[in-house]
Length: 517
Ligand SMILES: Cc1cc2nc3c(=O)[nH]c(=O)nc-3n(C[C@H](O)[C@H](O)[C@H](O)COP(=O)(O)OP(=O)(O)OC[C@H]3O[C@@H](n4cnc5c(N)ncnc54)[C@H](O)[C@@H]3O)c2cc1C
Ligand code: SF4
Image: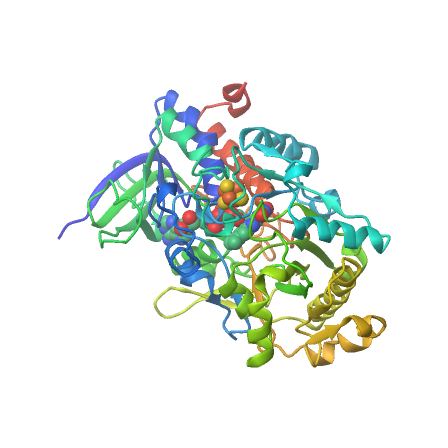
């Protein structure tokens, strides 16, 4: 059977924070007579079908049901597949990057001021605002109170919502269409501008266009459109089967796992020694504190406060959080009666997410297996374990200061700390109890693998996101990060992706700033 063929000027692969921001920025090219296409592997969803059922929705929206394992199976990685990418399931915590991190990247031409200018526009577009005091639930209030009682300063952050009904289901797909991810804001804007959006279209490989009378310019994509029925989500607008897409410029935005994997299976590893490497994920785990009374946690918006005073010195930060029963069960270390007792106390549990800032190291990397699928070789270093242990001690103090009677700490043996052990937290919570693989660690802030920079030994793309040595190929997602961001990344991903897309627009004769004015 012969493959269908399509020719466009620019194609974006992936529709998450990066791909969504890039495709919107490219909209004005259509007015200039160019053809622009977005290809997304997952389906287009109708949010009214989101059921809030934890296992069903995790299986529908997340890669590997939210439990994509690292090669040593010690960490599970969470990222989504569908129009909107991980913005379908993110919580919407909207924070600006620390200046010290962006300046520390030393990427020529990447100005902190310019990034902030860009992300401020996304903040306006995506309805970023603070949850009003009256709607802050017990879990968030207790986090802030606990910090203040210890003399620490909690910070309220903004979230991206329009018409939030406080159902707390953000990580299972907002059933109310309130969370303002790219599927609700940037992609519809691009479609209104005339961009074609094709879902259930997985890009298998990219290659240079063959030389010839009309060829030899740009790249060629081998695309597989999936026509198998799925329980949720619209069928593709393209016929199932193989498609060949030729484009003058190709922008890859498949996320920090799949972008390096796509470039590796396209054979680019031979000329790009940094491809897949310096990969980071801000490893995290959920801690619970048990109170005597029921708390509002599974209602209201799940996240409003963080504490990051130890970030520079001790490499961690803490956020108030809410997780569903299955994920909570997975995060509690151990089995048996104590595990069961805590889960039965679910409505009395306060929750805190501890996040470590891991170092970007060349051996932490995305590789591919014989089938070309991604394999993430990532090991928790001693420094990261120490950061997680320090974070756990701090979180335990917040729980007790907020009135919890017991705290479950995965890096303590036994894992349950009681109030009368408050003075012994440092001794009870310790690296010697943190057994890699036994302590449940997960990560959702996946970054790196196609770092930007000038030196081809340590970077995959130029400061403008063009793959070194391949003028028609660009990257516009979280894989561009040179180090972990030290905070929630989506706004920075969007700003960086727009920075890359603007360079592509200029190549095609469109001044992006003038088009946005
Ligand atoms: C549960 C969860 C909660 C989070 N909460 C927050 C938060 O509150 N605040 C915050 O700042 N960040 C949060 N994040 C992180 C944030 O969502 C990501 O950093 C961001 O979405 C990354 O953007 P991206 O474009 O790199 O990748 P993604 O958003 O993951 O998008 C990649 C897209 O590429 C598609 N794709 C992959 N391979 C192919 C292929 N071969 N062909 C076609 N398409 C392909 C995927 O299906 C996906 O749609 C959260 C993440 C998760 C998982
Ligand atoms: S809390 Fe708000 S944003 Fe989150 S799922 Fe419910 S309505 Fe949507």
